[in-house]
Length: 311
Image 1 (cartoon, rainbow, N blue to C red):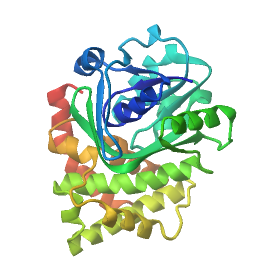
Image 2: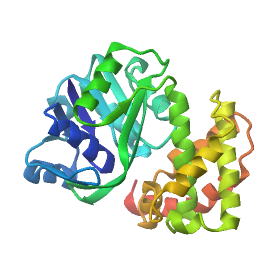
Image 3: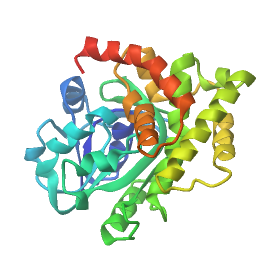
Image 4: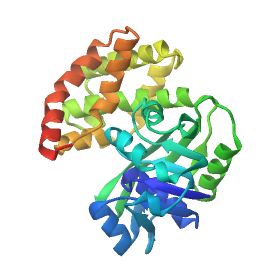
């Protein structure tokens, strides 16, 4: 397969690197310092499942120089999705798959407003990874996992080819029976963790140990479950319990990428995570008072970060 990876940060750098390491035709679409690093020094990944380095990788800031590909992996921030979708049009062939690996829940809808919907898959990943310096990625936790599928859950030949390609690269890749259910399960986990972590500015090992805060987290999780149900996705009666089990099993120092961005004064995925949940809740007339309060408390710093960065 021929694959393009848009973004070479913690997610794109890791998964794209694994694909390239396996000899799969992989091109990174990046810009600025990241593009310069990839072109001059290659890609280095430190990983809890095995370090690796690629002295040379294919990288460009101009998708039109690549031509049509079999799959595009979108590993940008949620607020960059629409711009990225417009930029990848030269990569689209008749059967090209576009797989979003963001933390938000509405990526397929955002993409389908810019490119033909037949190209859009649902997707998600599980990994704790981040940029050390441009071209240098550190994978710190979780066995890396990608999940993707057609939005109507058909098991198509193109999806099976992509799954096999990831497995050839040593990546755990799954095509779930219901991709929307899997995306909401991930969203339940990440949206609340991101919001609470960003608001308290402490790692999960600190906030999960406070009984009063666990009550707030519990309420937030139940709001996400209610919005999912209103959107037609039943996460099951044990969804909150399962999420707590995942939280309690995380390393005490764990934080989300949204929390880290907010604490560093950078634009974050606040709108793509909690903002998206608030909008969906209003559309479906579901009360989410806890989520609304967390979102409102984080908005001032988010607005400031965007005014400073121009984003």
